[in-house]
Image (cartoon, rainbow, N blue to C red; front, side, top):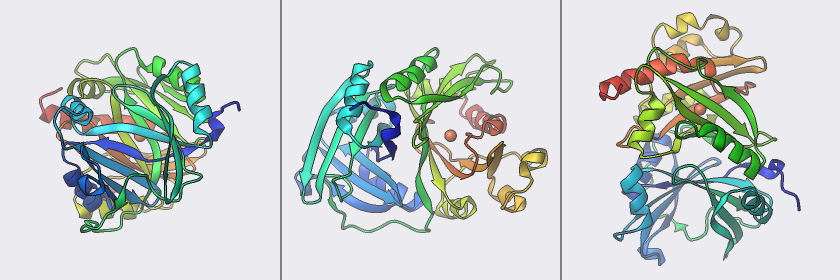
Length: 364
Ligand code: FE2
């Protein structure tokens, strides 16, 4: 059967590798509003790792750490710090997606395999992508559970406010200088994605740093993968800082969709999530972008929520501070009101804010 990206139904789970799974699971549950749904570890017959499965509406995070020395998970965390090991596409046929990827130049990580338990059959297969990240194709059409290998979690729930996070909108990778086109073409060839937007040198820049970016997406827009690489600037770009402290390429941010960003940001702030600050002048200068919106601009300003527009509609977004010890992975909260973009007109004000943080760390 010929494979096409129309068979991609969306993102499935995201696998985090971390130093201490229990602490990270509690962090995401408490601050981001996840339920802790599953647990894997010695009590469930797994001797080398601990993993928690977190869910919030359609979102699923697996958060995993090793509990024995000299383990691949330790090696990942030693090199990169806590980060994203695995991203996944929900597909209709793992075998055809995997074979198409391999036939078009992807490197195998794990051949398609089947897990069977009392909740059905789950099929997965994985290929290597940028850095130490893998992409897994998942067919859950014959599986009624969350993920095989997890038992129901029976410990305390950490959730405070309901945040209303719904699903992943896009996952962004930072890659080395000169590699953006390679990875955009990689996804075009191996997963039949198409290049949707290209931000060129000079489009996105400040006095101090710049980046170039391409967005690839499936032809049904079920998955979107922006890819950034650093560009020449007077000072070190934020992408370069990421590549330095992450010791290579990797996932930079995951954008999570909400149906009510004002409610979501209010709840997340109340839970203790820290966001990138927005300059006060931003709401004075956005002018035309702020016409005919459903939200109260004063409320957006109070919460630092950013606004952008294209010919089809508008979007609202806000970025968190990096979640780990290194300034690598962060999150974006996004609400789309018809707009297909990524907030490119906000890049300038966003970067100015990020660079203020970077300067404080002495990395600018
Ligand atoms: Fe984004």
